Length: 191
Image 1: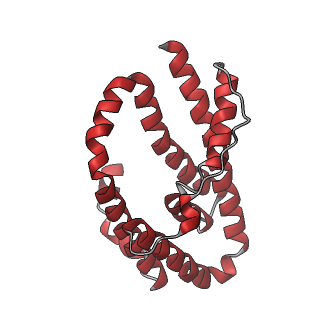
Image 2: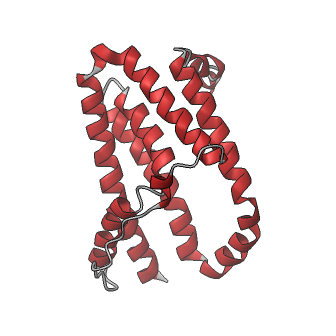
Image 3: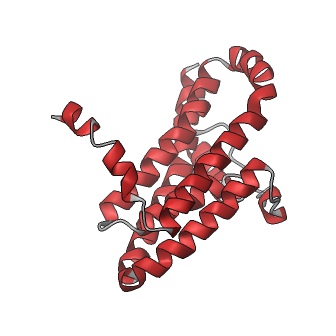
């Protein structure tokens, strides 16, 4: 069990390095393009809406159904091998997580510091890590749960797509700050 957990953590670190680096790069590029912020926000909003339409099933983007796998990567059963496979996983499966990852990279690009972009992608990586760690801890239980949950996957995709469409519309119309106004009550809890 200890070896499985160690390899799982190494795998997670592998894909986290890729995603966090993408966040840092997106933020850096976003800062350089700050003078075009309004136009980029509209373009990002349109792209987010397209991804939302894709997730809901209204518009199918074929490229998001393909994947690129590195079949020749041999990891063995060592933590270093698991790290390399996690690193390759991030590149190979990026099209599968494309809609959500693109949105988060878009948000990272609009941040005023690289640290904020890194934090966004670190949280994203953590979100991907949780299922892997839970799977490592209880693969049998996970398989039973997933077989029951699988029937609800389409509903989750549609709900995620609707959320992306709403976020995209807020960006297009320059009303994204509405979210911070509605969530300002959280500041009271942070003190």
